[in-house]
Length: 214
Image (cartoon, rainbow, N blue to C red):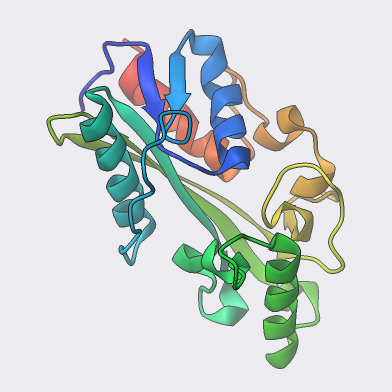
């Protein structure tokens, strides 16, 4: 495993919600970070069929364009009753004809697909959020950190916090959705804590333990 020797990195994302979450997580470590969107980098085509492949595509593109280490996240909602969909295509399910993303539409699409499968009971609506962080260096070296959180898909959507599919995902052991939680509640983790709740916080905890701590 390669340690991160600099605190200057690029967050390889154009997703405002994701950029904000990663900024919240890296802030306590004294990072100086700009996003790929801030630097006007073009978005690479995510042609991978796994979270790892797509995360690497984004991180390597930003690392090579900036000459700095770059941290990317590829994440999605994996629903058992839908044979793992939307999975790596989680963001694609939200795409509209004009190229923007409508997650209210995407959540409705998930609900319609579950209804077609007759998945109405909580035990039939299980799934997980998956996050894969990729840290890439300009020389092409990459490190991966995967986090998952189990839960169920609820309907109707609940809460206006978070982003994406958060309002329909209730993590296991909780009565509230990610959309009803504050950022601190959703992550459930700060440096030094043993517990992390969200998929992204769990992946980030591994990143910290592997690349930042001695």
